[in-house]
Image (tube, rainbow, N blue to C red; front, side, top):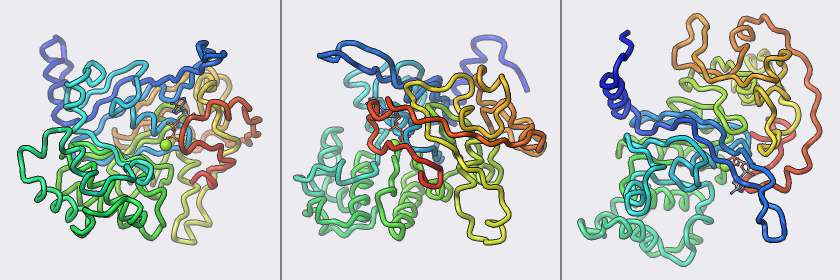
Length: 388
Ligand SMILES: Nc1ncnc2c1ncn2[C@@H]1O[C@H](COP(=O)(O)OP(=O)(O)O)[C@@H](O)[C@H]1O
Ligand SMILES: [Mg+2]
């Protein structure tokens, strides 16, 4: 391997990276000020919703982002699309730093990145027909001028598996699954490259979830899309993802190829999440390691020092875990691929069985948490089983 020595080499390297990675997020932070006072003019602290995210997504890849509710997944997805003001860091999309764009330039880039939401009823204007909903975005980006709009609408509906009679209907006239198809058609209507799907099937019946997941997969193939799929349900992400990232209190704690992540999670938090996912084989189910997460997710307004997971970690070691925040690094385990990265000081020792697990006692819930709850699906799960 050659190490770049001068600037020309470095810029060549980053150009090559642009080709491969559609999304390149570096050191992203989104801190929400907590305001107090009669006219909310005093900032008394911050919610560290996203606090140092590094994440890259290849062209055509599906990246699954998982973690308990409240750990910052939605805020990250929104910040990626510049729908939240970023406190620090860079978001490169196809090589362009979005944070540096404003007004018209940003609007033009936005066309290439669309969002699919958990609750299509909440995100679709109830007074607009499907035709109006679909035309709205196309018009905003000048797509109705250049081509036969009606043919495009019919194509879009076909792509998402809805009859063309759907055009004259209103959102409330559809079932949940159909409505999500409308939401997906709307995202597709502007011909995007990236789709951020935030809990795309969480509001749907289990029987319908698989259909929508399959649809997303088909559309990816047909239109060459790149996906960021956000979910608290690990089972959803497993099927569709090429790579999976596990997020805890504002940052990634582990990242790996999906198979690798589910077969051998290395971070204690990922181990706990994975151990709560039911395995169909009863023999495997009975024999495998169960790790219960104790206590609630700590408040992102007052995150623990050092490793943010140390307050709930059954392998916590004094005192390094309490004081030194671990970086996301390639694991040093024989046979583990370079793509497997983990933010735990002791991941290797835990994997080798050198560290004993100890009991974690629940820490009292921080009563201030209720006050800074701004997330739509924020709750304090008593255990991971409940959260999943
Ligand atoms: N606009 C906002 N103002 C203040 N706090 C927010 C805002 N949006 C989200 N939060 C807080 O940021 C944290 C992360 O929320 P969120 O990104 O919705 O997590 P997730 O999607 O993983 O459930 C939560 O504590 C939430 O209450
Ligand atoms: Mg969310």
